[in-house]
Amino acid sequence: MFNRADFISDSEWNRFQEFSKDLETPNVVVNLHQIKRNFIKLRDSFPYAQIYYAVKSNPGEPVVSMLAELGSCFDIASRYELDSVLALGVHPDRISYGNTIKKACDIKYFYDKGVRMFATDSKSDLRNIAEFAPKSRVYVRVLIENETTADWPLSRKFGCHPDMAYDLIVLARDLGLTPYGISFHVGSQQRDIGAWNDAIAKTKYLFSSLEEDEDIRLTMINMGGGFPAHYIQAANELETYASEITRYLHDDFGDDIPHIILEPGRSLVGDSGILTSEVVLVSRKNNTALQRWVFQDAGKFNGLVETMDESIKYPVISSKDEPGAKEGEVILAGPTCDSADIMYEDFKYKLPLSLKAGDKLYWLSTGAYTSTYASVAFNGFPPIKTYYMK
Ligand SMILES: *Cc1c(COP(=O)(O)O)cnc(C)c1O
Image 1 (cartoon, rainbow, N blue to C red):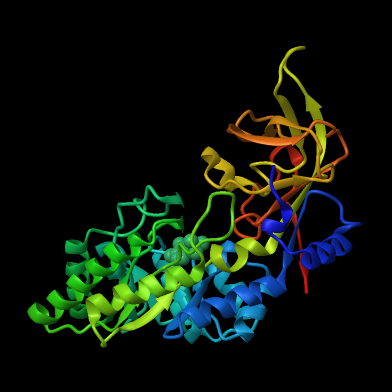
Image 2 (image 1 turned 90 degrees about the vertical axis):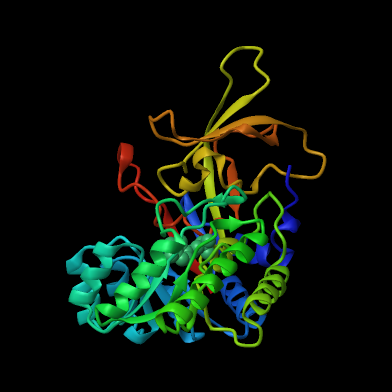
């Protein structure tokens, strides 16, 4: 159904085959080279921006260490992520506490560790920051509503209306904090580049009105993540995102572009992963059913959470793929005793008719939101194992 070469080169595929041949399934193999290439490409496409890697997308130590060496900063969401990143020698001035949902004690924890940059989107949180992280730089996340073109939306839960963002920036100043800028996230795997245009326009409006009416000069825009990985639904290449977004910035800010921060997760690590599973059972629900159920040892609870609502559609290939192999429709499901543990049913995947128990399935582009995005032991199945290929 999918042409492997559209997603991964022959040489990288061969390297992967060699590296993974004796590994127990299910597993995810992360290609560190690919992440490095993606990082360099992003940095070169947005030479004026500072990159804060969204650690949650793949918190593996080899990933974080390599990105730290390449000069990345880090967007952190919890004290646990903070501890693991600091333990790798990252300086706290390269860390932003980007989660708007946090306990007062966690704000204090970050502050005590030296972090001085905080996101917020509410009064209570801002007051906690003022109390437990005095004088820190704060930026306010605005709500982006138009998310239908993102495959994995992130708003609604995060951000506030621009009018409220305005009030929060004023309050931040009045509480003795340093109003730093505005952030947004247009939704993950955002296929409509125009989403950034609307968000930047909102930001510009806030910058101007705060300067005119309150004499507060903000200096930073955090444009979040949302840049694409390669799944089966086409997205523009990163270069196109960069040239368009840069144009939007100049349209609104002229030559005086604020300090720009990006928080990529998926676009850096997504393409780097291959999840290998083993077919456990192939069955039909009645004697004449055309569709087969393919049950495999990875599922929604160990690695494939983002198939929820069939949101992210990974390219899936099998060890039985070969030119001319006859294929038929399948329903792809995981190994647990929960009927929610079905990955794809509405969207028709096709796999070779010869597929049987013991064969392998390769889920391409599974480097983001897979390795740690899992249950601990539902039905006793452990989280998926991750290996890092240099
Ligand atoms: C998850 C997240 C990101 C990463 O988004 P991607 O679309 O994976 O690049 C960036 N910023 C924040 C605040 C996030 O929560």
